[in-house]
Image (cartoon, rainbow, N blue to C red; front, top):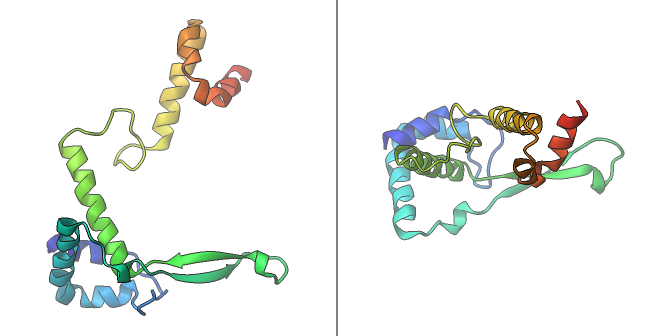
Length: 157
């Protein structure tokens, strides 16, 4: 229950209303009163493996990109039900903590992890490439076919 309350209070304020005319401001005002019911709902979804269809309905809003006034210059924005955002965070935290607690992340897993970022991955791969180029280790370089374009950039410099 505390986790649900914390998730609600950490949400960014949004002026957009979902399909049910709820936004984060409304949820934050009602957080104390609804977090027990939401926690029950979330746990029931996890236990049964069933996610309510009403929480899958999104509101699509056309946003003007610019240029001439034509339907081609609009892009769709999906406004997900606010309660679905809370559930997503609830699930993410449980899965993330399970993976961290059980050391299930690989050392080279950088995305979606605290204290790990894409820059770390690029730096590690760049160092690996340069090291193998200097040692003329062609076997190691052949395994980097996926990163072929990056290797070519490094060789050019």
